[in-house]
Length: 328
Image 1: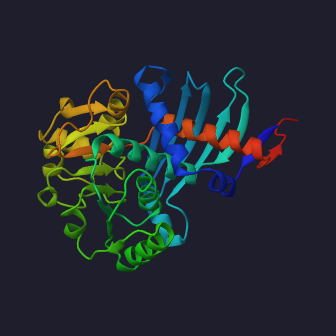
Image 2: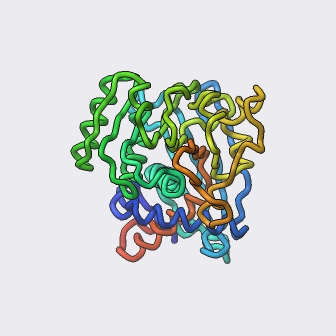
């Protein structure tokens, strides 16, 4: 029997606080070398302006084996369809038999935002209280919700090139989170005088200029996950103390690093640390208030596995989902 877990079940039982704790723990496992994490297999379907990936992993200490199929088609929004689609198989490690298949689009949103929240915990200034958001999609929404679990924001500024989108996004989150959230008309307004910046866009070109970034800011960049796409300009990359989720993946997958390396702006040694090294105490995070810190995320399968374990166990405990027999 395989347990089918719907998106509605995932949304019902998964909260950001426990996801953040689980993701932090999985990065500690990763730093200890207690995970198997092959580089994901990705296909760029340029004909459709889409991207598809297969992401397997095994967490040895947690004893969790999963594989996720995920796609990103930015133009889907014009058809009223989601940009990100994902299905995750939760597998019994000792037998290889699937225990569950879960809709993982919301799980992907939560685990990605949880990783940024963990990075923010270690890299942002303690008194950070102003958040700047670039993007108005599901990832931007998830990031605001996740970061609100670890920081008390006095002000959240939202920029999107689409005025209708940024206005609706700001109003919706203001009502939900009871925060002072305002839309801004210019990208510089979201970057200037800001303590923490989130870039969660589908842009292939930098969304703000490094000259707008003030001293002491922390940046979470999660939108650019292909070699030809970047959200950050050369000035920002050159100024920043760079932390990545996985060095090998980041150097192979994101134009935020690949492009400036090819231009000679930085090199691979410019990456200060992996997030696991920071959360495990192997390297310090923020060392002084004036640092500009950057968490460049491409998304790891270990994050999926850590959060999927929460979902599977809570669904089983509550009697949710639908058990089906796939074999004859």
